[in-house]
Image (cartoon, rainbow, N blue to C red; front, side, top):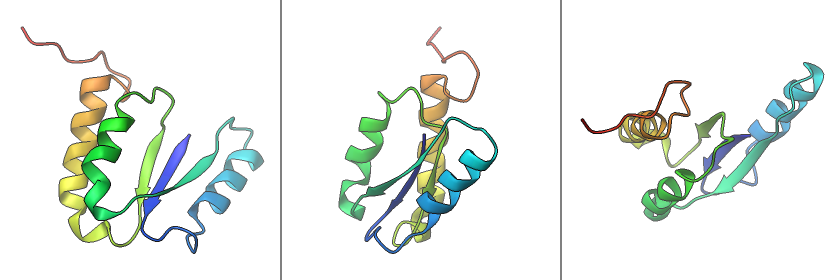
Length: 92
C-alpha cells in the first residue's frame, strides 16, 4: 500500500495514477488517499506505526511546506519499525 495524504484529498490524482501503474506492472499494491488535516499529522503518524504493509507516503498540500519535518518523521518511523528493509533499531 502506498498512501497519499492531503487536505483536501478528493482532487488528488495520485491514488488513481499509482494504482494504475501498479496494475500495469503486475505489482500487488494500491495507492490509498488519506484525508489528513495539518493538526492531525502527529496522530496520523502514530497510527502508521502499526501498518506493516506501507510502501511509502505522498504528501500534497497543505503538508508540502512542512515536508522537512514530515520527511524526518517518516525516516524515524521507517527506522524504528524496520519498514525500510533493515532490522528495527533497538537500544543498547
